[in-house]
Image 1 (cartoon, rainbow over the protein chains, first blue to last red):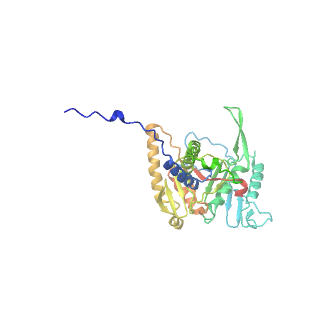
Image 2: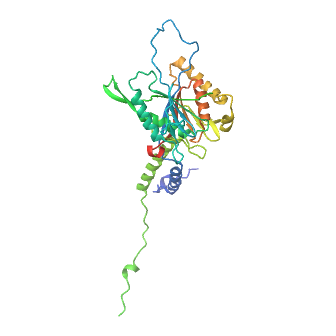
Image 3: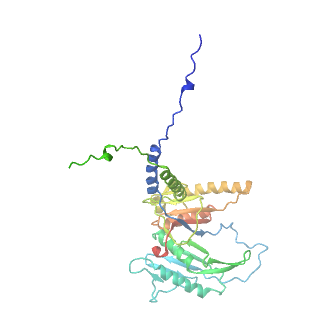
Length: 191
Length: 168
């Protein structure tokens, strides 16, 4: 028995258009969803470099030469609920009225006086520049337990941007600006 | 005199027009790609929520993805895993170390040191710390001390870029 001839030859290729409606629907849902979820906030960071862990022992190796020790200023910023106090190893900066309170008391609206802190930092840098302090570019921030993180971060931010030091880069012979207080640490006063 | 019936109306045929969606599709595709890229880069480091409002920072630095510690109002997260309750850490009076965090950091530090020794991949000791802006200093100190004790000495305090006038 002969086979029936195939019908394939007579099948016409139909010109069908792509139905874009489902894709369009999906797009219309996805775009508002992503717009709602995405926040156009640029992230940034502040560096906090801790000193490396000491291996114990107190030094005193054979290669250590007795050097004349440079003086240390030991700058500290203490943030309390009353305001901010700036201190050194042997001095505490008094406030405007010369009282025993913080160097920069809180403002009338309850906010910290960060503009005042910026000015004080500029004054301090002017005074200590060239005096040969070993830790002239170091400051330790400490605070009471309840002080919110934003206040600490803003204090660090203000100190970083208060004053800059210029260096000449030997590789490119260009001047590079670096924050004066390159080493900002956080610490805790244990009484 | 009667008006002649309008020939235009009578012979008017309703034509079937198709909407050209090509240009619209192009716009939507570009927007979708842009939003997807934006979503993936900013969303990975910090997700804003009620218990996690990153602080405002003026200094401009471009953060990179690295080890991440999140301190929200409720929990402390280590690479997105909740490891301790912030309230418990706050109440802990005897020590500055957070044991759960110390354990995880030590584990990762050992792995990184091993890689450094075997393959020469430098252990940079970097960690990103994202804290809620209301986090008390006490908790911050405990996180900082725990990181320092476990060889992560280069901390990056992450925040949202802001204008100086908004911060002061």
